[in-house]
Length: 302
Image (cartoon, rainbow, N blue to C red; front, side, top):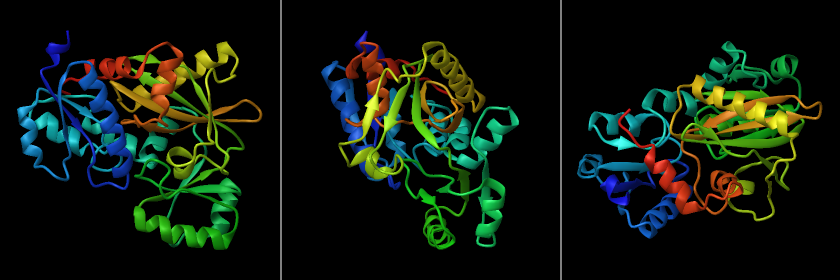
């Protein structure tokens, strides 16, 4: 069975703001495939010519952020007729863009917090009038909570806008949902158990995700079973609405009244020791190596 995959490349590293996390994810995936007896090598597109990928039969994409989740690497692999994990180029390009994702979801009546694209001309008063305070400011095309701030004052907004607009020319603000954060992993057409995330920071930021060890991940989530099943179904529909396939993750918030709001999709989730998809799989008795193998099985030419 292992030989059916041929020669596999784990795409990792890259030159996005998430390079460090990608290297950790890629190393974990590489080690798992090695243990399974798969013929596998690492491949860092920032250090090798992407045309060299033609010598591989399948690619496991462990790149995060721009260059990994924005559709560009997916288009390159498709042009070379190489099977790869994750979503196709179009859905990846939509998924990495929070504005496009939320506009699509809103058009399909998929619940997501109120939002607004902002420029240097957008006033703090205008934002507060439309979506109230506090609110989040986010670069539209980044992951791992890079460039996200919770805004409570006009001065804070002005400073944060300058910082965020340097990361991405497309900046959005999003209504603050006062409640708890959750995530739903999707692998090969099936949802995994929901995880509740309880950071000690004010919100689940980059530090809480990758640096601190006091963030709590609770699985089972504590959501009433029938409600969790319903939310998971909706999360899968939100995933498919963008055209996503293979595997990924949908994050959502639940307010104190029990209403849930989908925040974003991750088309190439982390696979580090802190990562959420392996945690959800573990709840079903699926170990890390089995999970990596299951994801690799989804690789195809899209």
